[in-house]
Image (cartoon, rainbow, N blue to C red; front, side, top):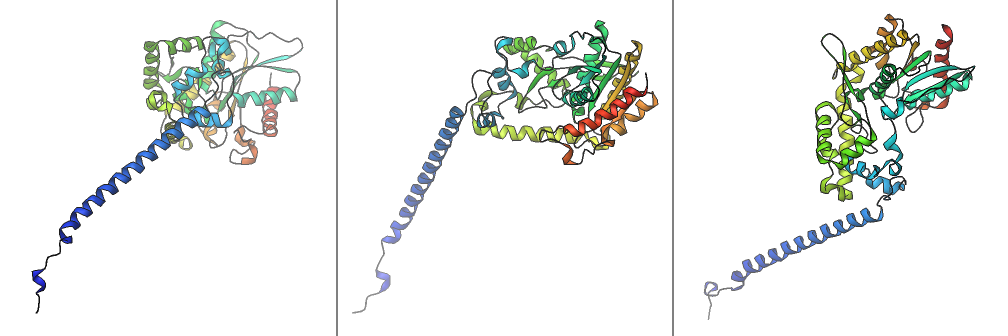
Length: 389
């Protein structure tokens, strides 16, 4: 007897969608479980790395290379709260460096039989001074400098000594570093040195319509001001408002710590972002095009150097300017300010005419010139010193 296929019914057809739905549900739960375990593992690893490689609580003690590496991305405020102690004795060394009151209000006793020289700048100009002293033992340099200090800092230091009537040497030298020129748009070393903040501050200068220099000072001017500001939320917010208004490199996201300071991964992301931000804002100034993105820089720089020379001559001193063109800034100073110095009879040297800033052999790994190159700069400066009374 024949049986029709149409008379049979396969009940597995009804069960198959339900089985598929149950399978998909289990699959989703499994994926979610894996993701949750992965997130938990990452969280525990993040916390463990943060604990194991935590910097010493004493700011005067340097951390290991790994401890420092994992802390680079901590917010500027977070770093400051670690390195600034309850008093000066508990501060990290960098906290006391560069403050104008500390660096510039010092006496300069004369050494009998020697020729005194005042030099303003940073480590680059100090290295040239070291070589000049080595080449001419008759010279005694009085150094007024800050870490990577721009001409804002140098000029404010010079003015402080000039207006206070402090003893000044018959030879006044001001060093201008090419790579420090972007800092002319800042109020201190905090916004352009994210990985290792330099807390010292200085004024930002601008020109009035009648070409007079005007200084905009931050409210924090000493390390004690900084300590008090960190302890007072209202004072600290006032300082941050000043940075937001007058510092071209300020970023609230990089300054404020909040919960992200607790995560190693978040700190590393912030560090990469900070590096990109500084690079982008520096590139936007277009230094190689005469600072086309910030035309106030060369005009303010010229005004500062001319006033420095005029005030030096008023007290009977001779001014000399060192135009230090380091890596990436070849030709920037010689094109923007050298003609004005020459037109006003101000002696100067341009380092790029002595050693190329494009030749990596002229530099140390930390970005400074080699001692041999500094010695060449010193010889050129000494020719100026000896060429006229």
